[in-house]
Length: 384
Image (cartoon, rainbow, N blue to C red; front, side, top):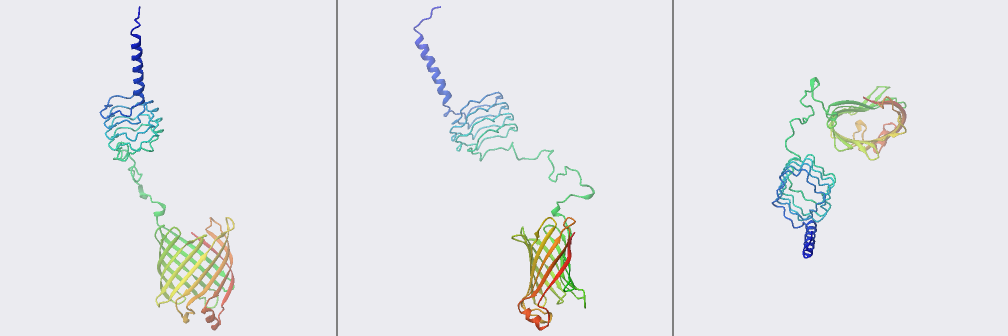
């Protein structure tokens, strides 16, 4: 067959023009308008792995069809997409199996508009594990099909009962909401030099937020008239903060045979110092202030050294009861305890010291009473 050589230049030139236009079309899609593009058909096997969508307009794009098997794994969206408009894009179709795992969206997407994008379809199986969408604005996106709405019929009930009754014991309660009770005896010991028994005990009933507390402290003489001096109170207790609790109630003092209103604060100061401060307003106008501090120096799992100190002050003189205005008395004690039975029982030995302060020293000398005294002590503390 004889081929004419006259047409060869024209054929070569046409091929070059077509090849050049193909490359130009593949390289630049920045001005493409997809506003009327209908993608509602079956696109389940479409491959977008090499697609450059850096400046495309998708404002009217309809993607409501079946795109369950579309593969975007190699799709490059790393360019400038700040002007892309998805406001009218309809993605309500089935996209449950779309794979975006390798999609690169690391470019500038700060200006992309998804405000009108409809994504109410089924996208439960879409994989976006490798997508970087840090710059995209989804402020007005409708994702009502992905979250929210009414729970399914087989959803778990809010109280986790699933309709099963609680039986004879009733609905369970959290431990912190259950009313409980406890008794704590912080001191039950004997002072050998003073021939007296000292005691301090507290009982309570309630929850972690509200309790009623009954507290008593004092001493009982073991010789002569065997007199008992005690200060007892019934108070309402409530936490004030993480480390501090407040209490308020009524009290009765057997030493001066008088009732009083009581208010106090008890808690843990820095360095784990157990601190308490209580004020008592008696019916005769006398105001009493008790301050105390205690620290537990743990030697090992059982042996504990406990130093403690207490101060007592009054607002006015009461010579009938041996009381002077200001600080009257200081008590200090150091105990060595051994905790056993899960630390619920702790026998101890120690040394106690008492001294009068201020004008109370002179008054005691006038009444031929000791100003300072010290004694060996032994006893036990426990709780249950």
